[in-house]
Length: 198
Image (tube, rainbow, N blue to C red; front, side, top):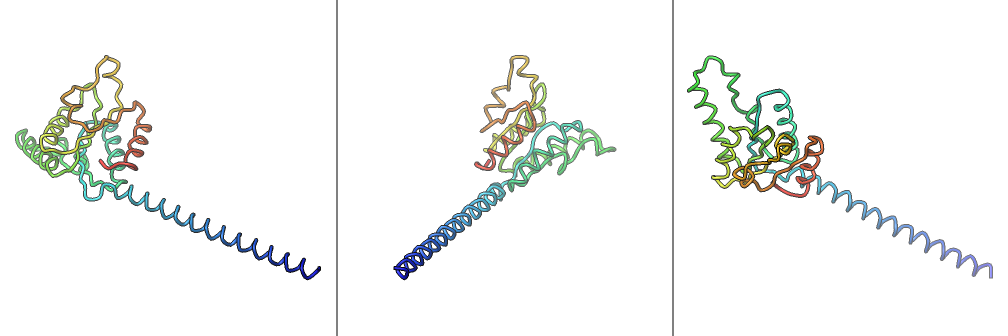
C-alpha cells in the first residue's frame, strides 16, 4: 500500500512538474511572441515613413511658431519621415541681409517650390486668423502635383468668429487634425501615425 501511495505521489509530482514546465514554456513562448510583436509594431511605426519625404508648410515668423513647427517635425521624423522644414532646412528672408527683394523672392520661391515638388506629402500648420499665405501657395502647388496633403490646427480664433477653413484649403486635405490643446493634438497625431501611413 505504501509503495502504491509512493508511486501515485511520484506520478502526481511528475505530472504537476510536466504541467508547470508546459505552462511555463507556453507562457514564455507567448511572452516572446508578444515582445517580438511589440518590437515589430514599434519598428513598423518608426519605419512607417521610410522613403517618404514631407514638406512642412506653415508660418515661421516668431519663436512660438518656430518651436511648435519643430516639435511637429520631430514627431514626423520619429516615424521615419524625412521632413523638409523651411525654417531649419531652407532660407529665411531675415537671414539674408544685403540681398535685393528680387533676389530674395527668387531664392526662397525657387527652393521652396522645388522642395514641395520633390516631396511625397505636405503637412501644413493651419493656425492663424487665416492660414499663412506662403503655406497656402505651397499647398496649391502640392495638390496640383498630386501630393498627399494633411493639415493640423490648434487656433481657436476662426471658430470663435463662426468660421473655419476656406473650402479651397480644406478641400485639398486628406485629413486635418484639430485640437485646441497642442499636447493633445500631438498625441492624436502620434496615435494616427502608429496605425497609419501619411
